[in-house]
Image 1: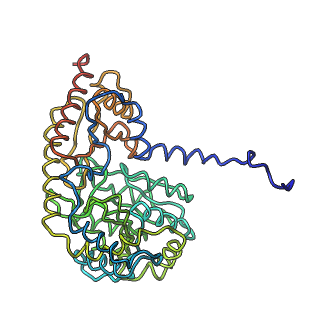
Image 2: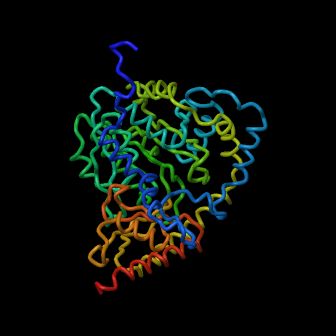
Image 3: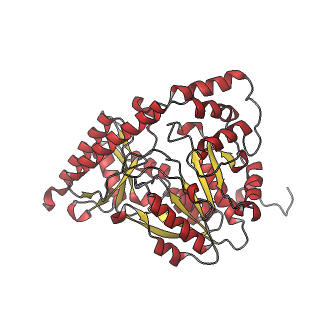
Length: 424
């Protein structure tokens, strides 16, 4: 070995401390830490109220038409090769047609870029934005999905947080957005329907978001992976409706609405009737990044046209009806639990945020301690707020079977009652 080449054991591949901290707060990592402290000998079934994957519950099985579409794509023998970097044209055309139903203009296949789930869409967008000359910061909601922060930090971008307001149905604090933005701000992220808050933004609020973005000269990254999973007073309105006011990058997938997160098919869509993204070469950058990225499975891409065209409305209605039922169960049962406050009834997605009153709870230090002890004592797993940037809050998933949800919330009540006895 050359004297100029260090011995392999002299190399240091240790990750950056900041990146280690962010990965430790990922939903997967946090839930893993909580589950590690559970009693493996317990015969009580574990109630999973911590993640957004209800696919294991029979009442949330995907549509038979989706399964048939994938089966047909596999058996056709036509989808065994590599796809193009941007994705198969029939799939992109179908997604463009599907999303255009909710828009005042028509999308084309050239507006759609396929990704391996919405997570890769986030990764690509953050990587592309970090490469823009002068782009040094991005505005993210708090509470929010920390994967955005992790990907932004990995690419050297500064993250600035604006609050979602719990007493105003978790609307974005747009005054804070204006105060945080400067000439180096590239965009703001908005998740609708909301993860982790379970809110659904009104048309009027989204219009104000678009006008704020226009005023600041930034664009909106609209995370709409829970699109149409709504069951309250506000119907789902895509941010792309306001694409002529401010350009919008829409991120979505089939993971949640079709309840198939393991199929890993997502997309980036440019909602930009005025052509800003093409003039600024952002589209070119997305295409370049996709050429050096992994692709969604070709047979899943091949199934998309039939999946979108053939899935019956009855399937979507059933899914929303179950979510409405479980959201109602969650809202009513949380009212009677000591030490927990729920600011608003969930109206969309699969989650609700609740605030812990630690002054009412004995021997509970913080939200992580609360979740670890709950899991150990009651075999109920919920997500601590630290995993979504909101200390001493908890995110509860209600997208599970109704009977399991009732059991889990009853155990949660017993836990809180037991830990509040000496403080009554």
